[in-house]
Length: 294
Image (cartoon, rainbow, N blue to C red; front, side):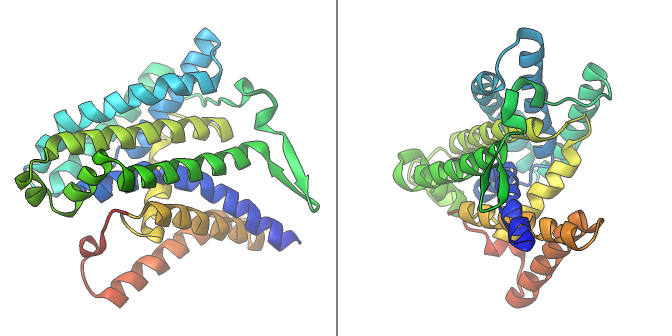
């Protein structure tokens, strides 16, 4: 029963990882850009919601409603001012640009808020620690909510890509932007919309990050690594694969912690390396050629 409990707890943890990785998977699937500021932007959202809760006593979920459109606007601006311009100079330049942006964000948060950690747990009442007992196992309400939000968000994005005009344009640009433009699709506008959607998901991830743990100005780096590992395990550009990758990563870490006190992070990194090397060996071709948004 204890091993089953560890696995189920890992599945729920994987829901958070999928939520965190959703934005980076979506942006890479559309624009082939790895946003190294992804984790730092999630921390920005977390601090913004914390500020609203601490200064104006707004419930974090109300603050999230405000943060989502604001972060979507940030994503649109980020694309128009940084990503779209830097991508004209090659694939490496946007990566360097977002790395520089992450450094600026991290240090700006440090100057503004100091080194103290922050958390939204005190502002969500009993949700932070209440749970439900099932067959002798306890599952936290927050963990269950996080997993449900991750599935709902990924499902909504999947439906948007397959059932809406914008979604069809996004998939067309992701497959071949030059051909899409020949049939009247404005690739720049579509990419800007995709960046806005990705940043909206980042706001949600940042909120749940601050609810389930503490954040500090330099928490973005570890969050980026976790998100990237979940995306790579699940498959580049695959939304449901991102959920599977997050769950696999969460289960590996949970079982690793069961085996050894230091096994929590090590098990996740080992799984990531095994999957990455296996895919390279089996396919024998660049990872970019394996990408397809779905």
